[in-house]
Amino acid sequence: MLTLEKRPQPSQAWTYLAPLVAVVVTMIVGGAVFAMLGKPPLESIRTIFWDPLFGEFAAFDRPELVKKAGPLILIALGLSFGFRAGIWNIGAEGQYIMGAIFGAGVGLAFYPMEARWLIFPLMIIAGMVGGMLWAMIPGLLKVKFKTNEILVSLMLVYVADFMLDSMSLGLLRNPEGHGFPGSRNLQQYASAYNGDLIAGTGLHWGVIAALFAVVVSYIALSRHIFGFNVRLAGQSPRAAAFSGVNANRLVLVCMGISGALAGAAGMFEVAGPSGQILSSFNVGYGFTAIIVAFLGRLHPVGILLAGALMALTYIGGETAQLTLGLPRSAVQLFQGMLLFFLLAVDLMTNYRIRLTAKEAA
Image 1 (spheres, rainbow, N blue to C red):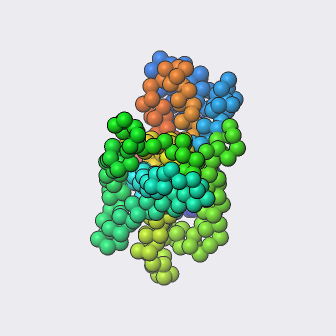
Image 2: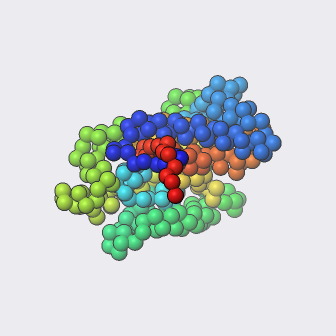
Image 3: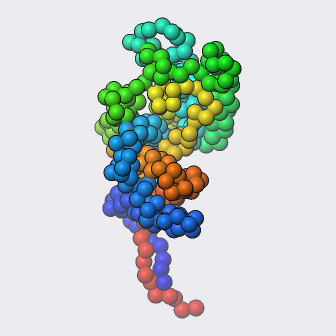
């Protein structure tokens, strides 16, 4: 008879093995799902994970992979601070949208002025401020009225969606766009454009910011008293209170960091790959980043690798849709299964399976 036995302490081996096992199980189950849809399972998995890196069009796909990994890593890093402290910000998508609106708004306010040294840094600051302000709403409500930050942050995503529609049809709509929705294309405004720093690599300022944030997050979480307080609050709130950690301040700081990084990701995206404020701007990066954060074990280096992996599923999924006719929903299901199986396999971190004799009635 198989039983679960709690481990005396969490298994270090399973802590690192769980994401790898989850990826393998996702491939197996995902292949079965693709087979039920009438698609070749092995070819589907190869198309998603292999072709973007080494396939016929890899030279085009690899820069796109870099571009998609950047915002996922930035948002997931911000979320990891709160998740480690037991603060559940599920509304990063809304903060990402607001960062894009604030950043684009500042850039368009200066149009057609040519002063990149001034305009682009101001856009970055505005994007971070926009995301942080949006994250402060659930943060302040939690501190002042003990509301549930999960529900409030999630509901604010829909408010941000309405704001995005309103801006693309109203305040930020291109006055020379003949009435069509959408702002001016920032890719055509040199002072606000977040283009490739090295042509053809996909390496823009958003990716540089993501790599820099990985280093800073690692230092903050593992080499600074703030990181110790974050971990202590998440593992033992009572012990954190006894040690003098201000829980309310920690909530606001973690929500602020999450919002600022999500807002920066939105600004870099709207000024670069996306190019303009449109109702279709949000593509779910804020929600996907939750998977990235947990797949990376809430560790900055793990998040870097998990962000690259999730970006690979985006690019590979688009390729599979075009070449194999896989429905988009199947690709999204595949991405969701990564988190599902990670949570399932993660059980082995704290428990082990024992084979015991069945007791007599």
